[in-house]
Image 1 (cartoon, rainbow, N blue to C red):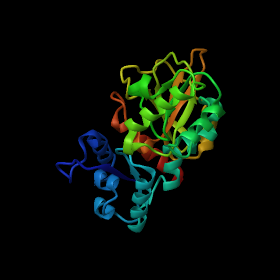
Image 2 (cartoon, helix red, strand yellow):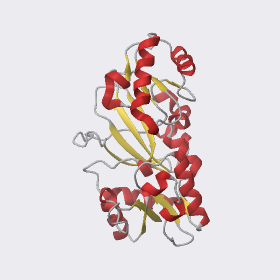
Image 3 (cartoon, rainbow, N blue to C red):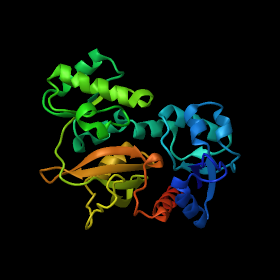
Length: 287
């Protein structure tokens, strides 16, 4: 397995400090590590210069900063041209990275959601009416503006068309060029726990830990995920994270699914655990 990590912007031959520990753990495990210019990939300017020469015949896993689906597709194409296979294909990355890709498989275990195909008011009102009435949480295909909860994420009653649109307009403004796809409206559910981040390789849960936003809130006891495994398996993706929270009625719910390559590792989760899970998953696939 070949691990790709972003380079340090000031020392481009070295891994970015945020991913240096994982790069070190990979080397200690006997894996090949290469650095890529994330900023160059993200800009889409001469992407071939962002990726160094690589050993032919390897299967690559990226662990780094977020890329749009289009930019990841460009990376996967570059790898293919150099004789390297991206373990997560461009289609798989988009399906994990954007809510409309993973929602159908997980609909029974996540808040009901509807979305638009762009930022227009008419399509937003269509989605709003489809969801119905009551409180909702707003995001785009990839992220919300949850740190601006009242003004750009939470809608107390989506039946209030003008207020809902003000929240949507503010979220669109805050996301700016990072806005992806369209608006997503999700039924609000009251959660009583910190989020738990679960890591899955080839449909198998390999690690359970805290969410990066609350690294001190480590889950206690064994979390039974037998109920979730069939849903994650149905998504059929090689490496994902699934964030869970406990609803007020005591039921665990899926808050988010994301591509594991760009999911942040919480403090307290050892880098070697992530690397071992990835390497073990690749060995299982080859077997």
